[in-house]
Amino acid sequence: MARAMNASLHLATSENRARDIIEIGMNRRPYCRACGEPTTVVEHHDGLWLECVATPRPNHRLLRLLDGMFGVAHDRQLLIDGVAA
Ligand SMILES: [Zn+2]
Image (tube, rainbow, N blue to C red; front, top):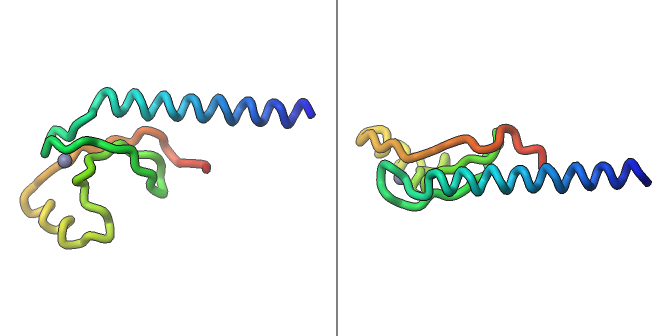
């Protein structure tokens, strides 16, 4: 019983911490410095990232190519390393 309560308490603490980190990140960089679009939190296989909404997604190869050609460096910042959930 006590073990289960500790586990749920730990989970709640982790969730609060994650929410804090996300909020701090979004407050620090609400808009992309490269294009002015808003930033958003995106989950990738390696963690939670704060990134520009205009950041090309991996499946948009043409956009990635254009981005590389014109050197647009959208804001992208790792908030939480390695998402366990
Ligand atoms: Zn951008």
